Length: 392
Ligand SMILES: [Zn+2]
Image 1 (cartoon, protein in one colour):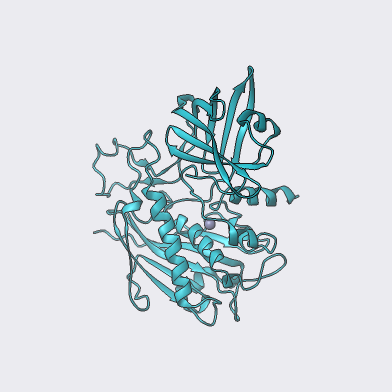
Image 2 (tube, helix red, strand yellow):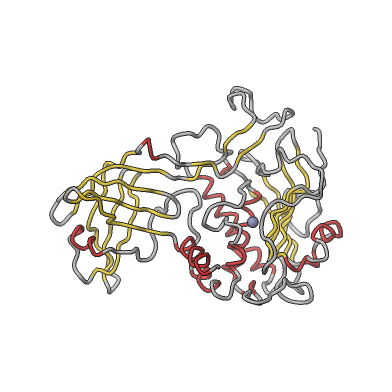
């Protein structure tokens, strides 16, 4: 096995405060051609360990471990989804990875070291973060990449929130962020996304401003309450109340006591719509049926890529169609066409749906006019959107 020792190659840095956030940082001179590859592929066993400093961290080691497990499970379940029957040759199959936590302290040969608190970093890692280390809230660094078997190694560092080495909590950043286990799980979901090859992208929790918002005193309460949404596919069930335009009351033949609508996928071809009453009761009021992909409306894109090296032995030439760039898991962005059946009167209307992880919009033809009759937006995306609106 040829071990290509690289100096620290990737850093997806998140900086607290006003410093420049995100982007790729290099210690200089490396070849970046495989720098964005996921660290692991196809059902491999990933050995990880945890280092935790009581002096630096509000949360105990057990609690920290629990948040990490939540984040790991989140990505495993995401990558297990079979959402795209098109455009997919090899999706890395990250859902079948076996995650193995090593017992005791990190020994150094683990694939992934998750480090909670500055005191637990070794001198090389401390050097890498430099003297301005307090600006970082979290960072993911790949330290080695093995080009035959396409495996990476490295660490996730989460800055502590107490003691002398805590992150800079100035201006609108909260102190002691890690007293809130939900916030730590969110931070780990973001950082693990980088381990799995996802760069900063989109308007959700892989956005480059996400970590700043997560610990912002204006928004952290929201993130404590928001559920972990799917990154790759449209939500199986929409959460919360969706916007209900006045026209929808007529269209769905709703009682005025209905305060909002909730949608739920029954199959890839069926989306059910429930009316939610003021008292919380729900009633099935309509069904979008026979939903077929509109081939002109497919905008799904891979969330990561795998750049192959000439030394790689994981894929055969025919398996990858003799290419050196292989798309990773796809994010669902599609249009669908079908018909809406209103259950009260059994009236039917043609419908057009726009579907993505962040939103679902249903446009229907009513008396030769197009109307938006159902509109869902993810709470995470909405929270990020609000923040961007108030920026100058
Ligand atoms: Zn990031």
